[in-house]
Amino acid sequence: MIAKYLRKLANVCTALSLIAVAPLSGWAQPRPDHDDFPTATPIKHVVVIFQENISFDHYFATYPHAKPNADGSVYFFGPKDDTPRVNNLESAGLLTNNPNFNNAYDAPNGAGSNPFRMDRAHVNTCDQDHVYGDEQFVSHAGLMDGFTGYKPGGTTPYSCNDTFYGKYSVMGYFDGNTVTGLWNYAQNFAMSDNHYGTTFGPSTPGLLNLLAGNTWGGTIEKNSGSGFVSGATATGSFGTVIGDADPYGDICSNPTRVQVQMTSTQSIGDLLNAANITWGDFMGAFGDTTCKLTTTGLTGLNDGGSYIPHHSFAQYWSSTLNANHTAPASVGVVGKSDGKTFHEYDLSYFFAALKNGNLPAVSVLKAPAYEDGHAGYSDPLDEQYFLVNTINALMKSDEWSETAVIITWDDSDGWYDHVLGPIVNQSNAPEDQLLGKGNCGTPKPVTINSASVTQNGRCGYGPRIPLLVISPWAKKNYVDHRVLDQSSIIRFIEDNWGLPRLGNGSTDAIAGRLNGMFDFDDHGRDERKLILNPMTGQPVDNDAR
Image (tube, rainbow, N blue to C red):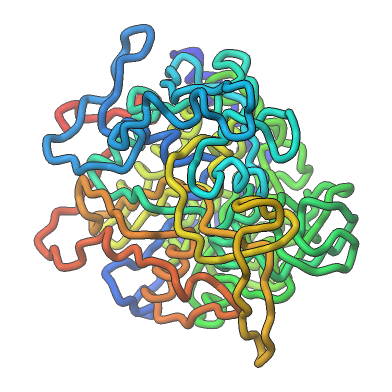
């Protein structure tokens, strides 16, 4: 363990040596007066940590009950007596006699698997299929029985064939003796078991929904190809983003990959700019302008590229594109409109601003790839290391009493989950598969500039994804059952700072509210903190439960 820790420390030092660090003169700036930004709640800082590719059941299938690891180790102390019921595989009775066992959709040989526990000793797994249409197909109109079958119209398995867990790895889940930190956060703060990706599909649609509640309005600015933008394949054509296109203009975007710019929608960044409210997107390895930094994590995986352009938030809008990854002139201007960075920063500037006392009102964080949790190049233990260190830093800061941390993920990676969410956006694009080929219902027109527009390719809500709220103001050991989606985060920001809705078909207008996960009337609360060990996920004070 010590050797792994030292290797981790060496990797971090190597990464930091490649990142442009702000001049020392910027490290002593006056603290901003947050009364300049009046809020509807006591929350003055929202920090969204946007991780990669986890379904709800993949991390919380048996919450709050965990089994010892194969080596006998136990990391989760056990549930509190008043832990509420969670809609998961255990409570639904689907750990055995699962519909994906001997009844697999589009698998005529009767193959399949029940869900199974993945062990802490084997956290490196293969990357599942999470294509927009394929995710709909295996959901099978809500029967959720196609995960161990084949992709649409063929004999190619939906599940990846993992070197350790085998050909039905898609049915695997981790419990609290691996994802210990997340289970401890859930025990002490608030979690949703009814939160969904706004649409089906992979990372880029997820981040667009997080920032805009909309994937419609993408123009292919460079190269051509199918599977990236529904309704568009050629350069200059326009449609709905359904795949992982790179942002047009980013110096690290793949020169041969389809590159897209969002040309007909605005993001929450545009609303914050208009209101002169501080904000920032903070991305791992964004400061490496060679675009070649790779990092090896705790478990020996190398991420193959620590900055991933198609994970890069507001880089998709020309109004907030920091094309050359320009660093701010000083830490003191982080979060402000400086005409250089356009609110896009390397992750190191988040921690620098926190230390300097000018944490923006809204921060969105993306871990370097090896710590973002994405199967294939990251894992739950490296993810835990990042999450815990980040939250520990916030809890130890002067800003904690006015901060809400929201942890969620961009998509499900295709990992099995037993719940189909409500389909609030219908679509009959050729890529849709929920009710048959080209069928996810009939889309409803949207009025934009007095014109009726059909925004096809937005079938959703998509797969169920975890969401946790960690804050002194969060309810304790609470599970929220109200329907939420990725744009619920936008809605909370809009409502908290008195911003308008984004319009143009954004789902912020219909999104469920996060307020049910808070208790803003609890004036006698203490400033709850839960400092965890980033290696184990356990409370530093072992008596804390």
